[in-house]
Length: 68
Image (cartoon, rainbow, N blue to C red; front, side, top):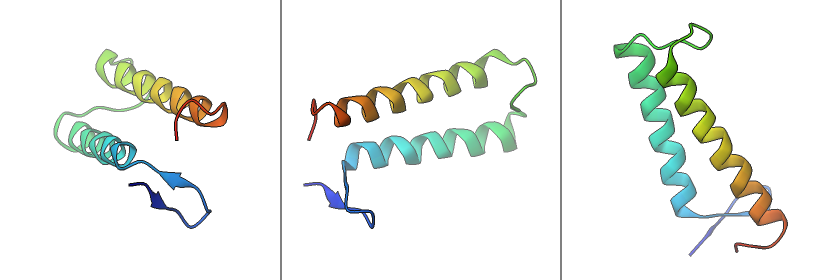
């Protein structure tokens, strides 16, 4: 069952889990692995690109009615 957000939109629990996992990877990467944006490191850049692509696909699919 989807949760109602304060803006009146529904959010899937799966999207919430993905967001929490991305935040955890970002914290661990910056604090323990020394990852920084713009430092030329491939792994943080690839993670960022993958997350951005996921976000774009999710938003577009919701706008065109492909998901509930």
